[in-house]
Amino acid sequence: MSALTFKRGIHPNESKHLTEHKAINTILPTGDLVYPMVQHIGAPCKPIVAKGDYVFAGQKIGEAQGFISSPIHSSVSGIVKNVTEVLHPNGFKCEAVIVENDEKYAVLDSIVQRTNVESLSKEEIIEIVKEAGIVGMGGAGFPTYVKLSPPADKKIDHIILNGAECEPFITSDHRIMLEETDKIILGLQLILKIFPEAKGYIGIEDNKPDAIKVLQDATKDIDNIEVSVVKSKYPQGAEKQLIYSITKREVPSGGLPADVGCIVQNIDTVVAIWRAVYEGMPLVRRVVTVSGGAIKDPQNFQVKLGVSYRELIEAAGGFTEEPAKVISGGPMMGFAMYSIDAPVIKGTSSILCLTKNEVSVEEEKNCIRCGKCATYCPMNLQPIELNKYSLVGETENFEKYRGMDCIECGACSYVCPSKRHLLQSIRTGKKAVLANRKKS
Image (cartoon, rainbow, N blue to C red; front, side):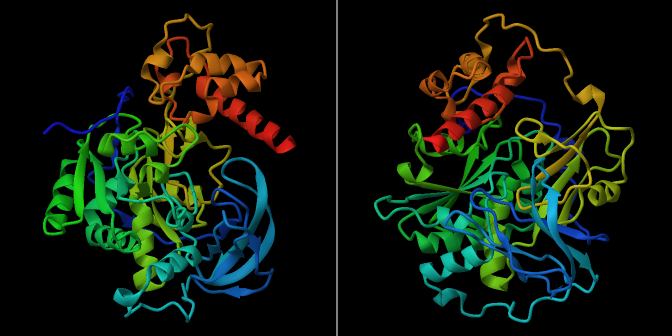
């Protein structure tokens, strides 16, 4: 049977060979841990500790503010060194808690393994996920408990695990699927307990045959879970594209997956759910790919949140040459870093250190009206028109041409022969629309 797929899309060089066959290496931090109070979509957290306080691993240090928000916990034990403003990995200033690691990793007394998991109600599971501070770990950072609490009129019949991992270089989810298979399945079964009328689907790109086999073998006797093999194509891992590939349902413009009966969760997110419910441990760790041609020994690391990018780069052997660009996330949807002295947060999937040969530095030229950006856009948009309206500040026309439906995959910029900065301008246009909405 041919692999499932979506309309349009592109095929960038995968570059996954650098790390896909390397087991996850767990490393412990050596320096201070920095916890920005913005690690999710929605309202920033409010620090609930002060300078000089002693904190334990797993202790809440940032309280969620509002419905769309998610608490933050310390990943180590130690003394709170400061509560101050820092530069967020995305480049803006925000409040953060800085903890001096005592290297004892003493865990909060109240964190213990649960023995009553089978008796937990769906409301109790959602509350555990909420208090554990779990968010989408594929990069979006949307609070998971909100996803698990759709409006009552939305009938959910598909729980989709996103194992596509379509971005070049990144292999952290691939390794998790191979090494933590049982936790993925148990985590998915917890979600299915919340939605008993749904079926679970694990979407995996066909360039990961080992992960497909492992999960097919593990689920062969589970009636309400199946593995869906999807075509290796970018952006197969985008939420709307994965939904279409597996269900052939299209999320309406301005709509959400729940509108078509679906909930999509990232692989590492589901492992975090397992850890929170079974072990009582909130989200304090994640797996990060450190790769690129400028890295001596590319690897996948399991790390404590708050650790510095610099520490991970050093653990991967450091630079073989000065990188032309350091990217947080994938090369298509990630963002260039201003410094490697930035902390790993919940949405940090990878750190890519790219050489000059791996980075496009061609000068932007005039559009030649070739139409490639529209031909390959997975959302069927007209990126060059959105680019034009964004540059001249015409937010009304930007919205008319469905600019807010852009998933920011970067396929348009990738295929553009004139190297137009399409994605960047569309992001700017979306921000302008949101700013106008706030004013009105």
